[in-house]
Image (cartoon, rainbow, N blue to C red):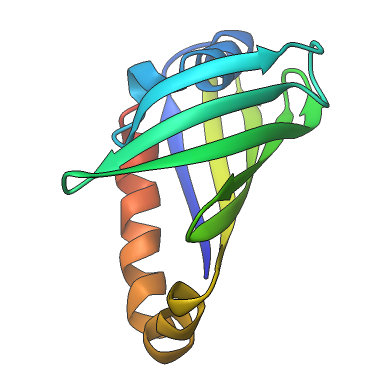
Length: 138
C-alpha cells in the first residue's frame, strides 16, 4: 500500500525538519510513544514507537535510513502485522515549508492477504490518514 501527501507549514525549514523528526509523539495522531534506543545522529539511529488507532496499540522497532538535514529523512518501521517505509521531504518556500510524506506499508501473514484483497480501499483510506496526520504539523 502506497501513500503520498503534502502540507505547508508557516515555519522555517530547519524548525519544521527538527520538529517533524524529533517530536513525533507531539504532532502525530497515532504515535503515542517514541523512544530513541541508540542515537547515531542520523542514519542508523534506532528507536521504538507505539501507535494507537481506534483503541488498538501496536509496537514498532524503527531505524533511520536517510538523514539529509534539513531537506530529507526516512525511516523503516518493523511491526508484528506490517512494516512501514516512510520518507519525508522538506522544501523551503521563503520562510514557509512544504512537507511531503511518501510511505509504503507491507502486510505480513493475514494482513498481507487483506492488502491484496482490499488494497484499493485501504490505499484510499491510507492516503486520507496520511494527509490528516501531516495537517497536524501546521
